[in-house]
Image 1: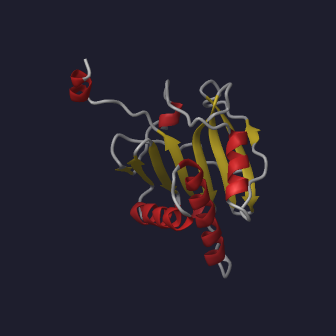
Image 2: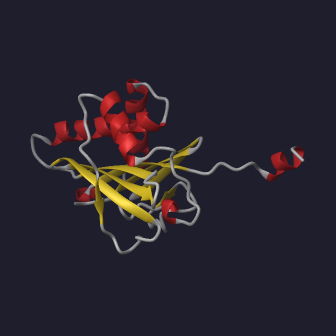
Image 3: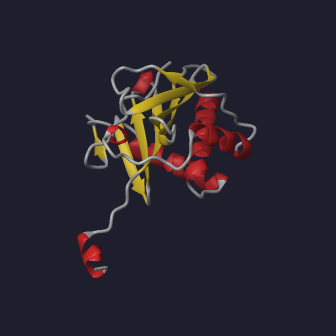
Length: 187
């Protein structure tokens, strides 16, 4: 099952060679939502779209930092997640679309965009139309880039485009910190 296990963030918003994924770094934040809670909320709020139960995936490369889990949506669409070890709280939620050629391509891509927008709505207060527009805007900004990220408030949106190998959309929490000038005013 293809996963976006290598999603990673460089220092800037765009890069061709991403480094280590932020959710793998020590102290990386997680959403206050377990994978089971996410799935329940997604299925309730996004009907008729649905996610089956996530299954743990064994990975020796980062087994001490996270637990990986995934579920197959259809033959060319998968949901996967990086989970905080022990609590199973979400560090990164990902939808991966494996492009197909032929007459079904347009419908398959539309379905992938529906799932990406629905995942976004679980974590951010968007309407259906707003989330669809936001996903389209992110994918347009990421076009012809292997890796793209955009931060909005306490959320990072990531798009990893591996061409024919697939496109992954991810949503991750980030730590917010007060700037030193603001901290000084609070003393």
